[in-house]
Image (cartoon, rainbow, N blue to C red):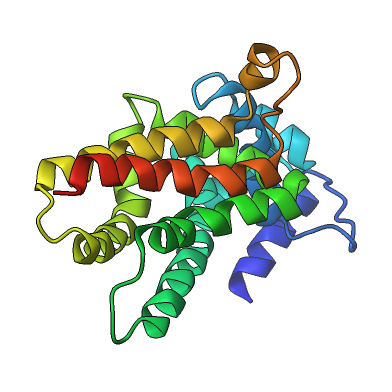
Length: 230
């Protein structure tokens, strides 16, 4: 109640008209920031641009998120937990089916990548900016190690534990390098750069999620097997 009163006062001070059909202000700010950060990166985007796109007063950015960096982290966190839960659910379903034996490597990899690609395929307009942002963060020396570690490492370790059951004799270095290469393939796919469209003269499209879902788990499983199978 207190937060609602404070926001109402701020809005009245700056004569901001709140449309009852709009999302809450903090959600509009997150949506706007996600689009702008994905397009132009963290440094190039200003708080004023975010507020303008969200149709909110700039003071409300600082009220809800304190700083541009905290807003950036909130954008990443908003969907990360949801996606991680989807992937963990898929892995646990597979493990329940294999209580008496070990799942196949391809099943485990499928559980890791399929929920992401499925979301991108079914709700492309809603998710494309977030996945582009993840691709950018994962390839940034300034952000990749810190941000990806914070939001995704616990889930990654859970999947690597499952893969160790498939390859109990795999060297730790080979396991982590295999994941490193998986991460690169996945985030390049997220970026949808159109590179493969040009390279293949239109035979393939970087937005063709059906073809990616059919091929990527097999490709990644082949890489893990090549390095880890003794």
